[in-house]
Length: 80
Image (cartoon, rainbow, N blue to C red):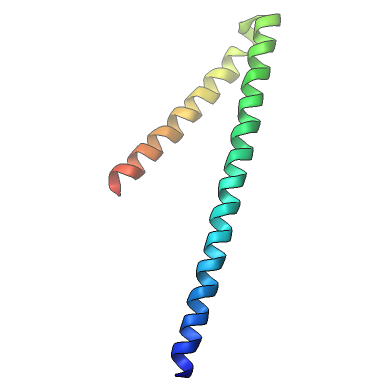
């Protein structure tokens, strides 16, 4: 009986911790997306005011990284 009680408590604690981590990850993902959106809007505004040429190399690098992440997510989903 002692072992099964321990296993039950351990499982409950592990599940509770996992839910906390998932919730925290979702919150931070939303915060990161908001910050990225603000960055993109700021860059677009400066590019509009000052001209695209100065911001195009950075925009290209960001677009490449976004493409890489999307491709990695697509590959991960296809393996599941």
